[in-house]
Image (cartoon, rainbow, N blue to C red; front, side, top):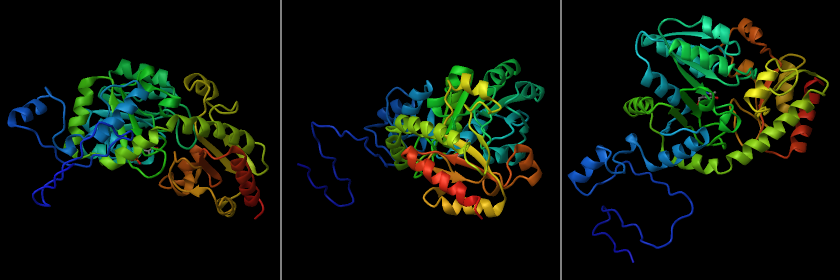
Length: 394
Ligand SMILES: *Cc1c(COP(=O)(O)O)cnc(C)c1O
């Protein structure tokens, strides 16, 4: 029996019991009380486990981080409020004014802005090179290069980075290799097994998987780097919400099933699209006509991932018609949802580029990127067949 508190203002005791909840408890508390100043001393000095203030850390974040650590083969990774907060923690935690950061030239849009706007304002130099060409990356190294940031598979052209070559370049230059593993996920690729020093995730995407959470994860191989990034993240206030961590952890229970199913669907959809009239090209890493086919097969263990990019014949009338006809597939600038979503780089992720730069990247009006979900594959193929057909009938 719980005794009622003396006043409503006091906390109600939690019911005791000999059974345990099977589901992960959600702990939204911002503060934690201790038994004595001695106990608080022990907590702050790391002699006793526990929490003090949620911006510094909380159990739902740690439960989630531990799970992703397990997948990535990491220890001491931590959760922050978004994928961009993870990029911020790595860069502001490990760089100083005067350093140079070399980035892949097809990074996520906001990572690009970090390189073009935020870092230079803080006195950090940046430049970009093609990560599918390790020699181009090597040529871009400067005496003060401290960090290299790459994504394994680029969006939306699905070019595969020469991770082995870039890891050698980073090592020779004494620079930290940071891999944003959002697209590939540890199911497809484990960066720490390939020379990465830091791994970053937008947990928002495939890991959480249900488009209802914005979160990030970052982990370093070196515990000192973890401590530096964590300290900066706490100071900058990049803290995640306990509820978001709880939701993401819940999403992870089905992550491997979702990933494998979505990947099978993606491979099948890519091959099917390639047979349809009105399709100009299909990009999928394990298809023989992919420019990085051999690297994809060896680096990603023959697995192609959950993203498919394709280009239709025609212009805006045709792309509008395709999206309208695919009415049950969300047309939304994201990826990694449990259901299939469709995005149009020219009007969303790559709208800030000049038409010339888009053309250089092969991102004309007709290009779509599909983040493939776990629907029955026959349904997906039928919906895309109908949508492509409709696009060519206007
Ligand atoms: C979405 C994304 C990010 C940013 O993640 P948010 O959770 O939206 O802040 C970073 N990198 C890649 C590759 C992404 O797809």
